[in-house]
Amino acid sequence: MSARTRYWLMKSEPDAFSIDDLQRVGTEPWNGVRNYQARNFMRDGMKVGDGVLFYHSNTKVPGIVGIARVASEAYPDETQFDPKSDYYDPKATREQPRWYLVDVAFERKLARTIPLDEIKQHADQLGEGFPLVARGNRLSVFPVTAAQWKLLLALEKQ
DNA sequence: GCCAACGTTGGC
DNA sequence: GCCAACGTTGGC
Image (cartoon, rainbow, N blue to C red; front, side, top):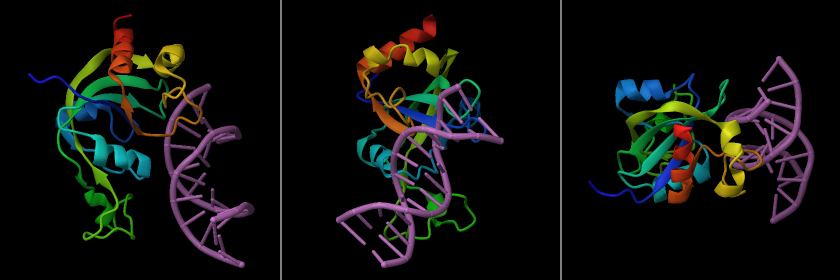
């Protein structure tokens, strides 16, 4: 068993794709990311086996609900080429794709949701720059340090 | 449903 | 290259 080297947090709206959906399908292409910063993290930063905190956004109790892992190298997001898709991008071509994704595999659900308001109470330890506690909080994919990963998962047991 | 934050687009 | 307008995110 190899040690994880990197950690990430990925947001999903549970109405669109929840941790239960991921548990059901096992592995899912993380399509639909249309933000360059988030894309760059997936394309340039992620490696197979990296740990992922699965976060539910835009829901009654936003928070971390499960753990997943990166299950592929980055490759072009097919939905950018599909005119019928909500994620269609007319400026993307197969020769020059604009959007990339990775496959994400289910590991486990947390014993309980770690709510955003609890996470905010640890802003000092997480660092003011941690995207979940920073102003705006719009970035949907971002790196998590080993220390942040440990701190956040310690909250699961409380 | 509201609205602040903020990324993107496009006219100039 | 500036920046106003616009669209989206996401907490509340």
